[in-house]
Image (cartoon, rainbow, N blue to C red; front, side):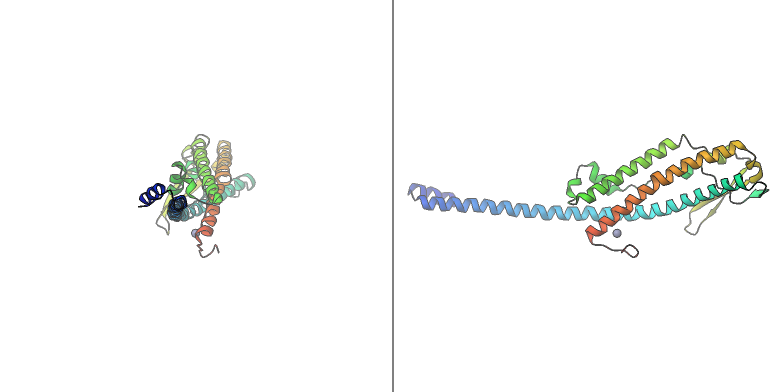
Length: 246
Ligand SMILES: [Zn+2]
């Protein structure tokens, strides 16, 4: 229609009308581009929101996992430290079976990290740009890096931690129970005086405590803190609040 109008005006040499027709064409194209941009922007915002909501779900799960794991690992570490302190300081204080003989072993530093699939998907498929906040992007990347460091630490620590409950099986006895959450738990008793006199045991205990300390304080807790940090940013972005973190 507009083309027919332009060619008619050219034929009539009505240059003002030609100019007007061209302006109409250009204006139409600009409006079309604008509408397209607007649609794209709405689509990106919806996509971003969907990603952030998925990320929030993953983070909630990981946060609960981290909290429970840290509580157990710190509790185990403190019990092992108490055992060591007692062995070094309270000579002859305990004889016979010792009920709280927790020793850090391979399982103290092993855990399967939650998958955080939304974060991994976003970063591994190069779609991080869908997140408009550079702060959220950086926090997600940092969390992924922390997860990798934690996993790498576990792989390497396998070679530096000894299985004390196996190495000293004659003196250490494992027992199990099912806790209130229906989870399998282990308690350890040992022949205290026999282990106290065993220098090899004390060396192994100190070595394992060193590895457990590095696992908890230099890897597990920083990873957990990064989860909490990303959670705060997501709550802020999605305008969410929870009891206890308001
Ligand atoms: Zn939240």
